[in-house]
Amino acid sequence: MEARHQERERIARDLHDTILQETQGLVLGFQALAGRLPADGEIRRSMEGLLDHADNTLVIARQSVSGLRASESEQASLVDRFEALAAEFAHGEIPVKLSVRGEEPSLPEDSRNEVYRVGREAVLNALRHSSASVVTVALTFETQRLRMIVQDDGVGILDLTRESAGRPGHWGLVGMRERAARIGAELSIRSVDGRGTTIELGLATGDGLWRRISAIRVGDRLRRFLSA
Image (cartoon, rainbow, N blue to C red; front, side, top):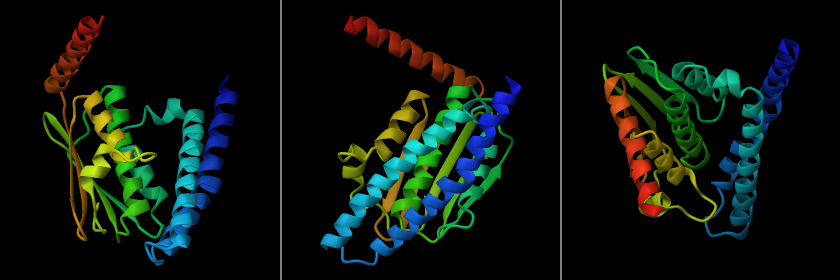
């Protein structure tokens, strides 16, 4: 069993360090080229369609790799996971920088995973669409609260209301809101045309976290009772 686990880890590591990273680099390179084409041109539209397909393929591939090493990665701390994410794009066209303040508290696995997934989605969205010079992730651990801010200095989200509602085939902001709601976190998305986007998540920790979890569970039971 131990040998099988080590082999799965080796395969996941090799896939991540070679195919996934190289493919992500190619996608980002083509996105940069597409950004230089006229926005209403047929070639630009065709390239963006192919890039969307490439993004979806990468998501599926990353999920497969995550499945190979889920038991290890999901046990890792938030700081460790964001450090790995920043390292993954450290030499890309748009670097990802991480800052940490305070000491990370003990969180339920579900809460830890959802916070990371919201942050990761925010980072990937910025890398794909913002044309920024840098993406920053700031984790702040206070006595009874966790705060995560993902910020870029790019073009901003031109139609934030439309994007937040969700376009066909585009689930980034909708998914982030759903993940935040699932763990009782507060999520705000602020964007200024030409001045970048800031995504902030706040989550109660300690006693406040357990009160929120209890409230969510009671609400779920009530909704199931009313719909029965």
